[in-house]
Amino acid sequence: MMRLLHTMLRVGHLEKSLAFYQDVLGMKLLRQKAYPEGRFTLAFVGYGEENAHTVLELTHNWDTESYDLGNAFGHIAIEVDDAYAACDAVRAKGGKVVREAGPMKHGSTVIAFVEDPDGYKIEFIQKKSGEDSY
Image 1 (tube, rainbow, N blue to C red):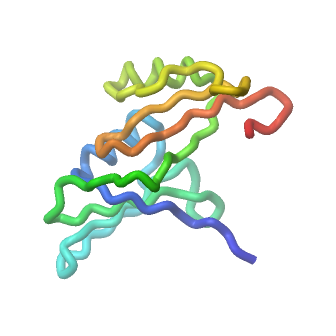
Image 2 (image 1 turned 30 degrees about the horizontal axis):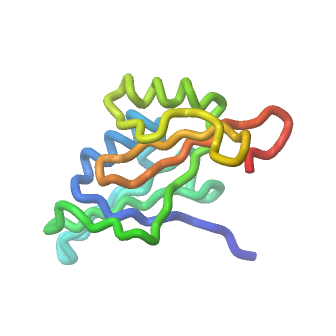
């Protein structure tokens, strides 16, 4: 059996990223460890414990303040009860909404996009009552 464990994102400023994922998106810091000999720190955040949930690994290389995000990575998706309210909550906490909540192009699913301090996109997908969101 296989299970998806985590997605790793390289972040330029760990404290700003931790503040965003914890305070703006409501994730918990699950564990964090510095590796002084390698000059990096790993922090794992998520909505549940790693033994049962997929989480994010935030990797902070001490000597790198920013990254070229490239054009291959798309986004992280989070299911929300109400995408409109989720955008309002992100804005109220100083977060950046880059695509307001509304129906997706060529479909009816309500989505929105926010951006973390490093420019990674997070998609909110509004849960449909009684059916899958996808």
